[in-house]
Length: 454
Image 1 (cartoon, rainbow, N blue to C red):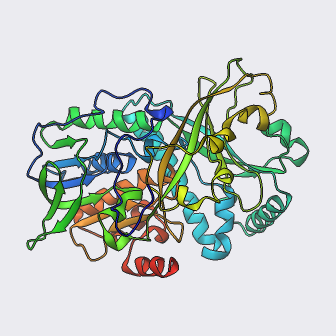
Image 2 (image 1 turned 180 degrees about the horizontal axis):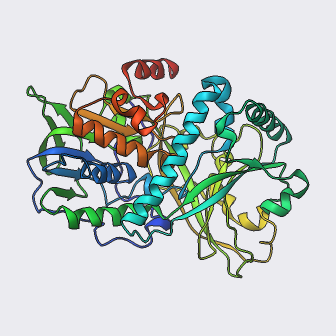
């Protein structure tokens, strides 16, 4: 389903199932009440990582809300959170590419922010005793192109010599041992960066379970309740229209990622839905030693990277494959249909993937167990939107993660929760949470993004 001016961007029914959804939570179809509530203090649209962690931090505020309603169009946490790579990190190439654009000081700030997110995920998982296979790990960014590798190393070394902190916890693998260290055939360079790996669906659904248990009177969850329109009434209250009735919320959070423009027209061409592909690969013959790192692998210059997350059971979640479908623009750009898969020809990319790419997997008899699609929210400037919706005093947004939400959302949600609770703006909380200015949503950013897409 490709977006068009005549078609509203909303989650489609019956999305393809993913590996992360293979163990449904008992609350997957939760409706806390038979009828949709008619009013609440705070409404949250979306039940993925952004929506649930925002709710979690709202209830941790000094003055917690008296009533929160979470609305989900489909089953609980069935969107991007349940379709991603399952790791939280920022690529060294992303940091290096921003040195000239943002300046090295702001890149330091960005790296510190992401490291704080990793720590936050760990802290919440421990505090709430979430059984979500969370591991603090390292991740390899691997280049198979000599020019990419050389350019990246030049930027890194210059920043390292200048004393910029974004280089502190990352390192280049020794060139003579690249294949030995990474197990990637033909690796030209590899950088080791910090990361966190987890089962994101389990993190989110179990966190919600804790909230429901803790706040049974204050929290109401309504799944399979799509929001089709939002309007602001004369008294500033938000009227949230669904097929089951209208909910009025004093304050409203859009945790809607790729679907944001479907409800907020000012985000049209600012947060654009793009369709991606991922798979779950299982070896029939166990491979030892176990791959302990996650990966981003760039095969050729200018190509989007594949991402790979070894699971504790020895299987692999691997996504990307953009080289197989990027030329077919309607199949992925401005496309929000995760109910269908890419063509069989495109999906062949995953056949023998591990045997083809990794040393030591040639005799693993690894097979593709599942392939799925997911919808990401892409922004022209590459940065997420956090803060009060421009021109809407009683609305806030946390969306547009460009496929990297796990490295942004947990701290972003903490900040948005405080903004909502204190009726404040991004500028009021950014220093407390160390959030780079690039993530602040504003009228100016909307205008610049709209101009860039024209």
